[in-house]
Length: 270
Image 1: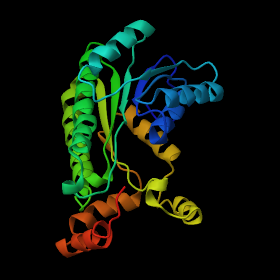
Image 2: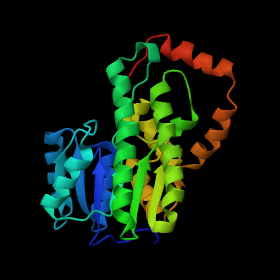
Image 3: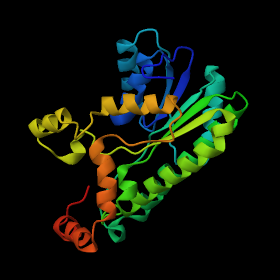
Image 4: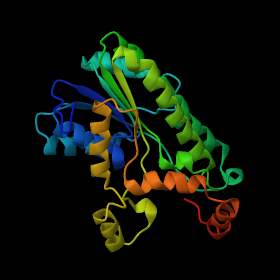
């Protein structure tokens, strides 16, 4: 189960597939011959994603399904879709999620509920369903997306960091529960990905990628899938991120408060 393993005759479900890292997961899977079920709430973007995947990887089966993962009946809907398409997915990538940078007191209750619905309920529900389905086959892989922020309870990230911490703890426990059943569970904790989220000028972003301080989304997706197929319990990209876990843990309260005053108190929200 080494790097660049072919996945012909395999089928993957990818949530949050219409853009970003989710799309990179789909492209990496398709490049290995894997059929993909692309799930997102935005049907128009899903159709664009499907068209681009089929153009780049002719012959690969791509099935789109517009689904709101905050709905209470996501398993029933997904099972109906799977029966209709006559497929048997053996890979699940729980990638869908949201991000915001704001005080908890200024975060609308609807946004708080969405964090919980997407990062806790949906990940738990889909993982439980998929793991139960794959036990009888003694083969399958789950890749859940956490974040480096799960070690970084900085001001402004209360909901994001805490729900991502849940995903990490949940996935690590499920990894051990499923180990004797042949179903791998991996949690990825990305940090330092070259996306517009960082707000870096393009030249600095390219330098950071060249120095391996930042990963490209494509490189991250490839490595995460490699780790998943090797049944690794966790993947943290980049040496700087591994070091920063220790550094953040040692960060004094005064520094955290400096972040709060310099960023949040000046009204920077995303």
